[in-house]
Length: 461
Image (cartoon, rainbow, N blue to C red):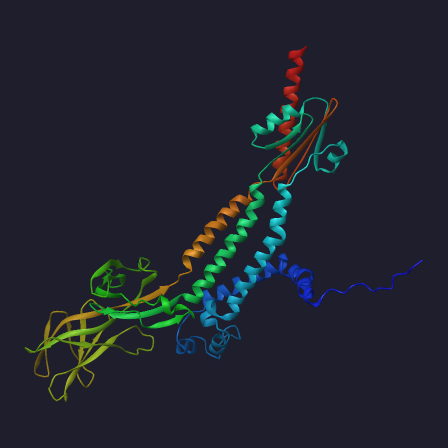
């Protein structure tokens, strides 16, 4: 008699991380509660990125989110800039949430959805009557045959598996098991597109006078990989900017007629843009978002035409007014101020003491300080918001895949078994959804089977 005193062999050290992942990490990562929590957190911060203006200057946040009083008691400009709420979608923690959510969905797909699909594709016959007792829906008939049932099921688009005349398995709606996998693929694709857009996209703003050509330079927010997306070999010319006014003097709509120019100055694209009708070229979108007055064109006596810039004046929130100063003597010792509030051509002229001298429209002349001042035109400028997001095509593709998966998920995976033992026919079935509709379908099948059996019996008698 011998005894074995050897101790159990310990697992090698390099296998411990794998066991930890399988036993501890993956169950947490694939937990539905984690996925729901991540989705809610992502939705919450996405809402904050919609409510809180993104990509503005520090002065903007200091003015709109002061420390006293703090919005909701805690939201101040310091909190916004420290946490990164002024550029939520590009922060490391928001992108980390997207990566973690996508990883959770991917792990769930491989550890749960794919095995569930493989299980649904496997099938077996029921060869004993007692096996039908475990089905939620089953029946025992004293009439009918497996072959008759097979024909009825084929008419209802079931796929039939039958090796003998007394045994049958049928199923339909396997696409419903594929649907959740397609949904996960769609969501992961959307997340990848969002991450790619955050890393490579940019936002710019430009205020361009009518008639000027510009390149995108004033970048206010950009991803770390966005440098390659900046336009380098083409520019944009604002051919004309104008505003349509209502009969009461309010703004109806403002427009920019724009041309895209190549390196040789040749026009390669052209469009008139207005609100909600942007210009798109090579993945860059130009939105009409604002307007202003860039300058005024005047003539003093018989001098050449001067175009003087006009600046936006501080009115303490009482509307927007642009102004400039025009010298009326060569030594700049005297001059007048010109003010304008819109592009309808009305210009107010004030002397050095702030007294209103005259009111003129574009094309009119007036006498000031002994000279003839003619206002030829008020030159407008278009305010453009410029965006590039290379992730948008990926996101749209993901939404298409997601909608396809949702539609596929509505299909019920229904299974029916049948067994004939002597003069007894056993029929049973189950489904993963729409239980009431499936029960009604099985009852209709059994009723039709009984009717066929009665017809055959009458014919034989």
